Image 1 (tube, rainbow, N blue to C red):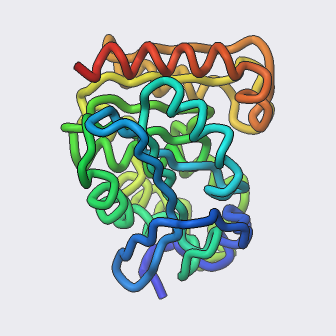
Image 2: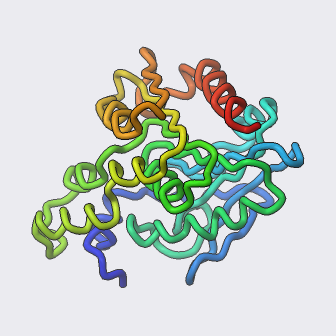
Length: 252
């Protein structure tokens, strides 16, 4: 069992919602004691590769083939990362333990790849930001409907006493492992931030804070239509156009 309060089973059960759906022909990635059921498509040798981390109520299979085809049409290869316990992966989802999985995922994604970009949607932003912090050579960081402060989200799910912790305990762990302000500033590269202005689950002030932390490196887009789980459906053309321009401007 993990030593971290953020990995307590009660919090994990309330914050992560795994499903068993898995893609055909997955790419298996080993990380520590787990195997992650990822998926990749490389139609364009040497082209940019976008490593995608989905939200906590989604699985990789939700994005295939629609989004992978859309990215391929823009000349972008894709590597869809799966979480522990999701979509055929072994192990149990837990917030801090999964931070270390990003290294194994990117090692697999880097094989025969062009420039690497990382994309995090919703809870997936935690792991995209972690990767960018650990490896600033990532060409660009994309955050869709992302989270500025994981501690805030955790406190919406649990009372600290339920997991044997105090608020100070959680604040300490968040500072040590989940401080997105420090991570985004440490990364130092270009950051594309996209969010629905009327997101009812993760308010758009999360996007605004992330953009402020990235400073002049940030490209912030707040879309007037859509909600947290419908933003891509409603704004698909605009989002893909914005993403395509971001990648093209940095891939050379």
